[in-house]
Every structure is written in structure tokens, then in C-alpha cells.
View 1: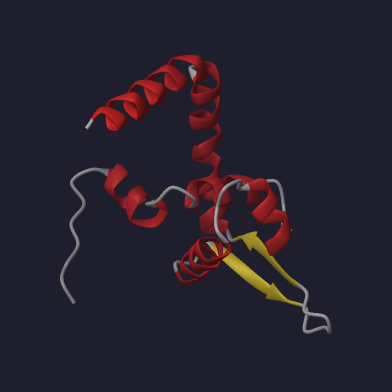
View 2: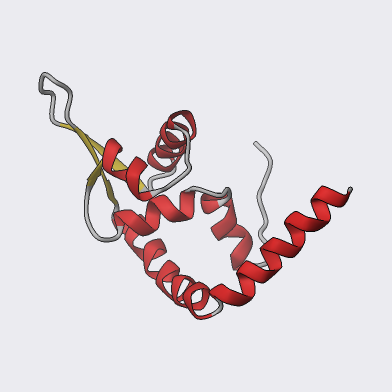
Length: 119
């Protein structure tokens, strides 16, 4: 196994939270455990396949835990571990920044979309 040396702590964070949906999943789980269907409604536009894949990866990485109630019909919930809670606490300031700068970011996204159509 190759040794991993992070040049910056942000690289370590991105090794766990890389991707579009993982930060949103962790953010929503910070308020308490959720069933898969509830997460699907909270994390809008995520496909079922991608949500399940990210939940599995976050579970494998020790960020969240999967709780299987072993009932019929199946009842499964996800919650943050202590490791995941420490990570989730860092997302709140990012959310605040995004809320504060949402109009600027929307303008940037529109410019990107327009430029992509031209190429």
C-alpha cells in the first residue's frame, strides 16, 4: 500500500468528502439520523445509485454508521459517528459562506453554463 502524505489538511478532508454529494449527506446527518428516503429528499438531484454508493463509502470510511433495525419491511437509518460529527461541524461555516455569497455564486455558475454552451 502506497504511503499517503497530505501537503495540506484540506487534502485529507477532500480524501473523505470528495465529490458533489458527500458534503451534503454529512451536513444533513448533522441534525440527526435519517432514513435513505429522507436523505434522497434532502439531497436534491442525487440519483438513487449515487446516494447508495456515497452512503456505503462514508460508512466504510467511518464517517457514518448504518443502523439496520432488522424489520420487515426493512428499516435502515444512517447517523454520523464521532469522527463524522467532527467533520460535520466544519461544514456549517461553509454553508454560511455559501448563503452569504449565493447571488455572486449564481452569477458565476450562469457564466460557466453560458461559456460551456459556446464551446
